[in-house]
Length: 255
Image 1 (tube, one colour):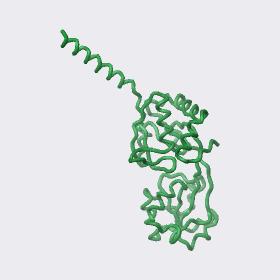
Image 2: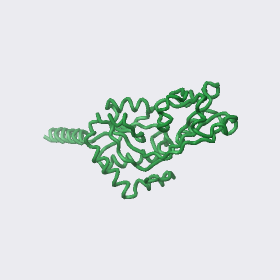
Image 3: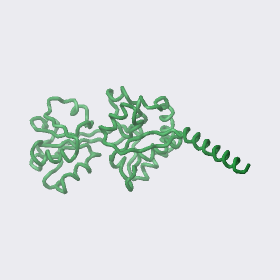
Image 4: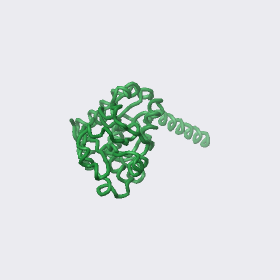
């Protein structure tokens, strides 16, 4: 009799565990390094945008399953619905066709710098000075409307910062367009020569960009966009988002 009771209790516990597991809502989120908003901490995703999304998930009864992925792969997968959400995605009409945008959760400086050889530093003093030069840029990156949409500029696109560095070093391009938040990663590819052999041109395009989370319209949680946005907004209003930014020593700008 006792054995039967133990078997029944074990079965009930297993059923209860399976039922609980079935109720857990898992948000599949992609991560890429974009300091100071996202970076690895001990091999794991960290930074303000990671902490904020984890808190949103907790408040909404979700669990985040993080995956490290390059941005182009993330965009492809979120378009298909095999990824649910990505932090720090620029809003544009093309992406709005397959993404919901949550936020903004503050604003970031998205200035575009132009890295070149020392002799061109003062000669690139305005946007118009880019004409006649070969400009290297990262494929899939949004710099600013004029630059991205200008088919008159002689632009060469590359998939990796290392390829961009080789292109400038070899003379394949005269100048590299560098988004300020990507500056550290790009400079690492030059082995300490930025500031001596290579410098930033006098011309800088200044832009402030809202920071959004992108939710796939094909996600099983697509219909939860308003709920997730409401949770995010309450965290902003309560000051918890600003506190997370402060913890990471990142300035928070609400507008």
